[in-house]
Length: 323
Image 1 (cartoon, one colour):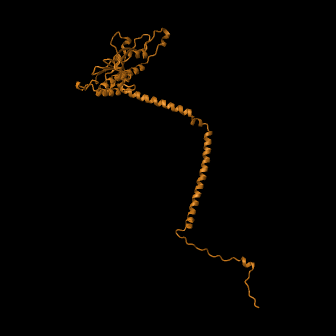
Image 2 (cartoon, helix red, strand yellow):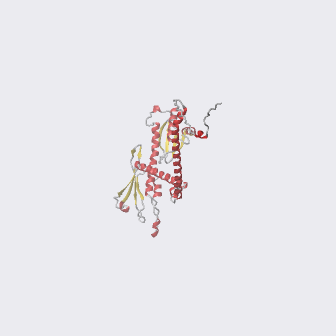
């Protein structure tokens, strides 16, 4: 019986390292998804690192901002630099009031350019003149329709021996429709006859206030005159001929009082009307009189509560062309 030799299976043989097979090389095709994932992995890692760095920097900046805010709030200059809402409202009101004052000042400068007031000195040659013949003159310029009209003059002197600085109206060329006497009594009150030390209680005079008020009244007077002239021009009374006149046409427009606050109208059928204006030339009332008395229907047709002079002129034109 023959014996067959078997291979040795000792433990030393099991511990002996076996040669490894080389890894298989796999050629990636252009459409292989595994290849694209492997290529994108480095870019994603770089982005993650950059995002982490930015988040860390943002956290550091937040901490620095908190520290700076706490430092500023704890300092003593914060109440001055950060006023309350009431203070801001007060400042806004002050700025608004200042802006309104500046607007009024600019308007006043423009007004003075068109209607200036000039002061000058005059010597009265009369040997018996008071105050040695010294006279203070004021010249008021008036502009109408882009042209300067004839100026008005006001002469003042100082006739009071016990109040040498008080003025009085001496001569003037102011139109009678301007209330010069009332303005002079208001702004240039006559001194009282106080004896001795009571002379300091004399009423104060305001020449500047008189000049302003008088200039305003003169301009109002000329504005009222201009309203009458504009109404005549609007109705075409300078161009109408007798053939163009109808029974409802206005044939005459003129000033009815010395203050130029009333305008008289006359129709072709002998009706008459009155326009009553305020100091600024705004229409307050309009009445019409016919052969039977007051014509209420025509007055209501021609004048409304809030109508201006332009509206009345338009209605007069329509009323005249309607017949």
